[in-house]
Amino acid sequence: MGAVEKAAPVVAQQPMVALLGNPNCGKTALFNRLTGARQKVANYAGVTIERKEGLFTSTAGNSFRLLDLPGAYSLSAHTPDEEITRDVVAGLRAGERSPDVVACVVDATNLRLNLRLVLEIKRLGLPMVLCLNMVDVAQKRGIVIDTARLSQELGMPVVETVAVKTGGEKALVDALDAMWPVHQSQANPLSAIDAVSVEETQREVRRILALAVKDADDRGNRSEKIDHFVLHPVIGPVILALLMFCVFQAVFSWAETPMDMISGGVEGLGAMLKEHMADGVLRSLLVDGVLGGVGAVLVFLPQILILFFFILVLEDCGYLPRAAFLLDRLMGGVGLSGRAFIPLLSSFACAIPGVMAARTIQNPRDRIVTIMIAPLMTCSARLPIYALVIAAFIPDREVWGVFNLQGLVLFCLYFAGIISAMAVAWVMKRFMGTKRNRPLMLELPAYHWPHMRNLAIGLYERAKIFLMRVGTTILTLMVLLWALSSFPGAPEGATQPAIYYSVAGMLGRALEFIFAPIGFNWQICIALVPGMAAREVAVGALGTVYALSQTGDELATSLAPVIASGWGMPTALALLAWYVFAPQCLSTLSVVRRETNSMKYPLIMAGYMFALAYVATFITYRTALALGA
Image (cartoon, rainbow, N blue to C red; front, side, top):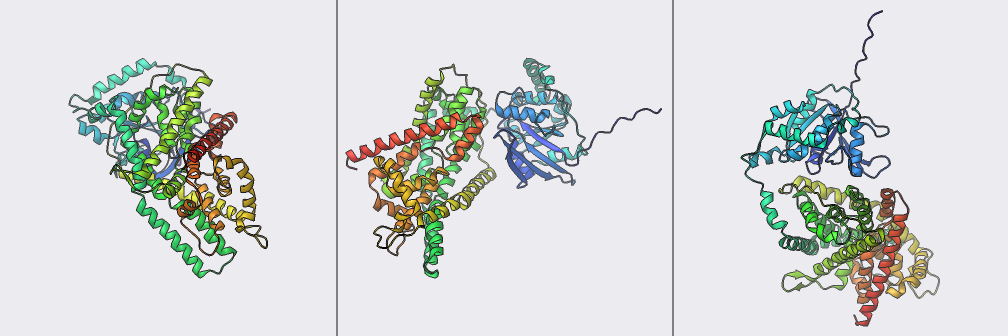
């Protein structure tokens, strides 16, 4: 008998390349550079951790699948994000196999920290390529890296990349082409990682750096000099407060012109429809339902984009981890660590990514408390409501010749949300038991100018999400609300507007019994119901309700003057207080259920936020009445 032939390894037709690295190493920027628009975002099965996968074709015509793994410092996982990264690389996820190639992305200015993860992954025995990202920054600082020697010591290809520049990914693509065809292989067991101690790994990192990196001429880290002021125990918090204050001033000051343009366009379109369409159900649907509802929300897009612009700038330039460091002592006093700052800041955009970002917190108690208070941060869905009421009742004038009064009120509302979140965290700390806080260990990335491409992509994605909500969820709810508000019609001899006799009117009057003590009329009660699906829907609902509540032929497409003439100041202040604590939208409660794997926490969240909202609104309304507001 002849010798038994060994089976040839299977060649992957479209190999999977996994991008892996520490947080803040530029991994996602490299992913966006390679895949462009050809990427899809979903969640890993069984968890709400984001999975980003894309396709790209090399200059040689080879096609690759690219997976952007969550950032990790080690495969000895301490957080849900790191667990996903470990399981994917080791091929432990159900229905998935190990990636065909691992592209390790490292910060060329911080190899001492980044190389530990590289050595751990190497022990799994998968094909690897090392991407020295941010080499341009390293060169400017005078750090010299011998890539050939580094490649020799690591036993893998080493390429230089600059993910934020056009063509900065070319060396990686060429290296992947050189590995073609890629043979599928299985990762070694995870026990291979633990076979070498952390101390031995760090000694190996130092040995490799001594041979391949020369930093004697490092001209110093500019970030360290800036941090002397930014992280100063007195100056630092003042800088942070001034930055946040300026952001909220800009939200009103900069957005005025584009908001006027959108409002004018909506009003013009409404007038055109009324002029060219006969009076009837269809015209009422388009003018009262669609434009009166959707148009009332769409006008706040400039303010939302301005708020996100500042958040993205602070994140991209490297300031946000410094803010977390500054707030660590303050947050420690209420039972949290500074690491909770970034999830809470994310909640200013939407509570959902804030709740999901809490998975990076190692302490389970801190993670639960952060999730429970994240909705108290003033999300962007509240901004249209705040802006509407402030524009209607707070005069647009300067204070002390510098500040905008409307911006000051908005800042106070955001600040009230922050203070209430800290108070709730302090109470929860007492109920859940006091545990010694872990010291905050946080990497502070180097400062750099924000990259316009990243800012543009971030703002585009936020605008896209907002417009999709306007065109789907909000539009659907507005059409449904219009139908409930229009039928059945008013009986003969009716003395009230038709909506008063409709299904929505009946519901609003029924709820008014509950909400009258806090100053809400039946029109506001109607708007609160669809607002449970998405908070910004409340503005569109008010637009539809008041449009259908008008008597006579004139329709005020601008909602602010309508509510200014129909409400008193106590009601306006009460509604602002309600939305500081307003019960969370259903989608956020659903995410809390998935993140905590329990119905207990979303029920507690909905209950305590409703109670806080009702009590705070009652006190605000009654105090305003007593003071003669």
